[in-house]
Length: 564
Image 1 (cartoon, helix red, strand yellow):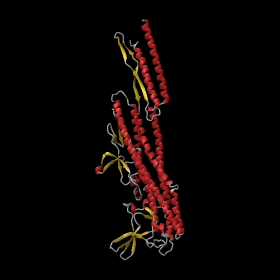
Image 2 (cartoon, rainbow, N blue to C red):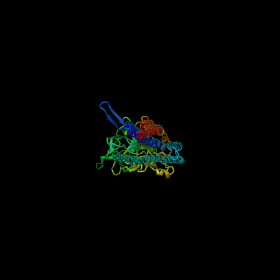
Image 3 (cartoon, rainbow, N blue to C red):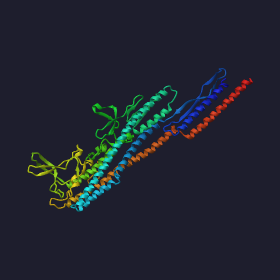
Image 4 (cartoon, rainbow, N blue to C red):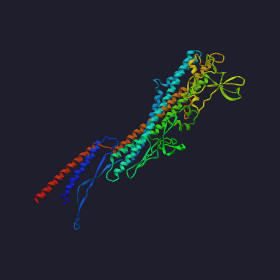
């Protein structure tokens, strides 16, 4: 009977399995453009056999058709791991390159005028002053150009600070997205385990969603993952357990009270009560592909933004090792520090010419002894037309005056220089801590230009011009060739551009590599419309053949029944 009525089972299985295969193929075609969709492939297997035992002759079997053994949902673990590593690395360098571009834009364009032009105008005004220092129009020109110079410098520095704050917003958003993706993957883990626990069905759509979430997570941070036998995925971020079957160990946020900058850290590895915390990123380890420490957009954002607003203290007099491990690692910190050092050196050099200092030792009326302190050099210093002593500086600190008058025990008045205090930015000549001396904005001919004998001091005016040509300045600790002010700015911009070219080259190379890896992944799980259409024709033909087979068997059985 297996070769008679049993033949109907063969035809019925052909109809049923061809229909299911057609449905699978149609589903593949419908999702051909769905991001992360993994094509489903039908595998057929034999159904049960009916066995006829005849020991005298042989054992015979009659088949009952075929069945769908499995619908394969294929991914390549090694390609996924390779893709996610390189994708994170490409995002790291791409983010750094975008930051360099933005820094270059901040310097090149400010209210429609390049800062280089403002710098040259200021220098030209000093040259004009050198020709006729006693002319008020020349003095006013210097004050006017100095005001524009410092305002533009402050504008650039403020723009860099605002850009750091915008990066900080992205850092917070990146941390929130990482935690959100962790919960999404955890929820998908639970659903997948629930569906696949019976060992009958594969949760293909849910697995696609989880793989998409892992791909996105890999762009934000360094990801290590593995799938357990129960179908759940465990994930490590930056070599720290991030989620398992049940828990999501969220990334915490530590906010600086002064800057508002957010630092990602691991709450479960920290003891905030003791003031100890474990940051998510270990920047004490060198950034390099060999160590796999150059992965993830979030790390690039934190590194680019830095942990503070930098100034010249982060570069001036700092060793190369300390600079490279500090401000030199960050695009924003290095740009702020080098630019602030540039402005600091210009304004202090000009101030030291207009209002020079010397050393003196004396005792004041209260018996306090001053040993080798800096005081205004009245012998060689100049004053303005109003005769005000000491000679005014062009750029004044907002937090303190340049000198403090002290009466000595012999009734001599010494003007003691107020040294810069590194612990108090208000006492320092930083970009945001200085302004053009208020008296010079109000007093005509207040700029020092008259020597002790009352004549215009041409030598002093020449020094103001000469300081622009003095080759004694280094952009940073890695710079070994001293330069002048004119070369400093260009060298600083060239350094920023060099970083940008490195990041750009790495980003573009990795973009091509990531695309190639993704193409290889698509060959494994991507949908080919041509291939699926061929399968559709094949399964449709198989369905038609099974239908005709049933008709033939039916006619045969009818003939046997009616004739016999």
